[in-house]
Amino acid sequence: MELLRDFSADELAEILRAAGQPPFRAAQIYNWVNNGADYDAMNDVPKSLREYLKARYRAAPPRIAERLVSKDGSQKYLFVFDDGEAVEGVFMPHGYGNTLCASVQAGCRMGCAFCASGKNGLSRNLSAGEILGQVIAVNALLGGSARSRKIQNIVLMGSGEPLDNYDNTVKFLRLVTDARGLNFSSRAISLSTSGLVPEIRRLADEGAGVTLSVSLHATTDESRQKIMPIAKKYPISELLAAAKYYFEKTGRRVIFEYSLMKEYNMNFFDAKRLAEFCKNLSAHVNLIMLNRIDGGGIGGCTKPEAERFLEKLTRLGVSATLRRSFGSDIGGACGQLRGNYKKTEKQPKTDV
Ligand code: SAH
Ligand code: SF4
Image (tube, rainbow, N blue to C red; front, side, top):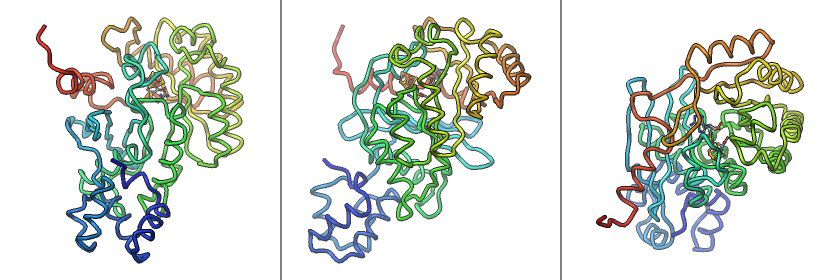
């Protein structure tokens, strides 16, 4: 069934106009949808219209099938869609505004060696409304509404590659920044990509104005190719040129994500090259402690080693931070909740 949330305010207005409804109905219903309401709650909408829509479109956000709450205030969710497909999301409380990490695809086909989301390939793309639904569901769960949000920032860093689901991701950005909807500022949204060069350029031309995070993770093509298959398609030089284009076109400072893997990306020359890359771009480096995945051969580093690498970068004049880690008490690497869910609920039960 189609989702009401997949429609923009204008598209919804057109659907209702075609159904013979007055214009103000669209605004009412659009607001309900962004508040996370199902048809039963839409008490200022005539029952007959609710029945009409209910027969055609789903209004409720995805079901939150699991919710884990950490002592540090972060929360992890498993969102389940109508077809039983599931993705994860994480809520992180920050003094300067709460952040939701959302997913754009169920699984991922990029195959990065260190990542749990890509282990079983791509299951399917999420629609714009399914991405938006994660924000709406959590906001509603935490007692927020479209006008008074409990979420201030969004990072597209859950499962999936946003630029491999380009149209739906861009539509999601339009929906979530619409003043008639959740009204996020594009500056409050980060899009993280493993580095699809043509799509980075396209996004720059799109004028979406979101913060671009590039998952760099290595400073030579040779080492990057060992951990990220996409690096075989686009050399670092092309990726940096695209990042520069994004910076110049949008004026938004680019962020390099850099997950620390001792064997691949942490020697002094890496720090030097990283400093060189940043200089041309005034980029910021976000260092991440690798979350080791089951069966993955790639190791991370210790906290003191991470701090030493950060110090090296800082001494070289790089703007860099070591990302604070959340939810250490509520489960390991991303992808774990979904993995368990797929094993227990989605797979046909067979006796072995
Ligand atoms: N596909 C996009 C966005 C989702 S992944 C991308 O790759 O950028 C979000 C971030 O988490 C990326 O920087 C990714 O490289 C990183 N990441 C994936 N698996 C990780 C792991 N096991 N430990 C630490 N960071 C990881
Ligand atoms: Fe996909 Fe990103 Fe994971 Fe790579 S790191 S497999 S691009 S989700």
